[in-house]
Image (cartoon, rainbow over the protein chains, first blue to last red):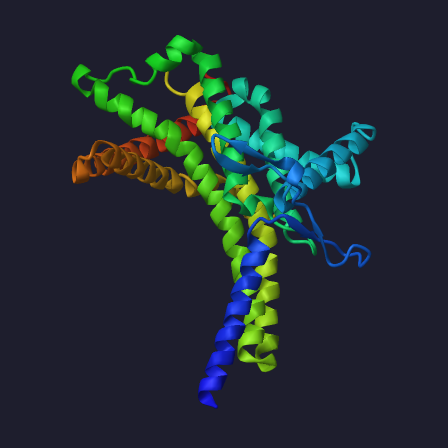
Length: 281
Length: 83
């Protein structure tokens, strides 16, 4: 009897684990609310399979790619709709968006690179912020999934930030000046080789820090919420008031984290650009 | 923005730069480990990489802190840098 119970619990645990993984990991099927297509739509298509250097590459559109398309579409729609309503004194939704944009310009761009350089990088920072924010929030609605909870997506975003940072540095100092800057002025000659290695390490550590932070934060919260829900199946229905209460609390925390991580990603990108364009000369 | 956000706004840039330290460490150790496997110099490049990563982490950490300090001081003057 006891053995049987333990065995059953093990099975439930296995199922809960699979349920959590299913919701976190990228896949080639997407759940849909309509029963017309069944509960999920298969996205994997043999048309997008091809061989590259002996490795089978699957370029089918996946769940997270769909979510990024949705995010991009939403932002495009928002921009097109709000563009028509631009007024001297914005109202409603527009004033909220303007609040965000002003915050990014004044508190992020100006604070890290100064008034002179901030305007040329604010559009890029706004794009980064709103795209990450939309992706984060799309993971919190039913049938959604978090594209930013995928290390490949965050690595892609970090690569964009990496290119932007290097581009900003080269624009400010010139390509030659940028490479000369790898040895900061005033460093004794015997320290120069070490400084070059240290600086190059830093160049690659910056996007790495951006990438891992966003991925870990977005994934961790979802794992906690799903585990709390899964606890109901493991420990019985009696525990549900507690877990659902904690789950709702975590969900509200997740909304906060969605904003915070978008802010932090933007802030750090801006800071790294600021280090190059407004650093010591 | 809510009340008391001013202090949060001031502290926010500093909250995130710890990750820079971590990033440098991980990249340094990773490169050392990878080169060790390539060249067959088992522990030495890993050790050198971790040391360089640590040094690099400290260096970039202080660089960012000093940069933010200087920016704050310049914002207080209300005028941009001479560049």
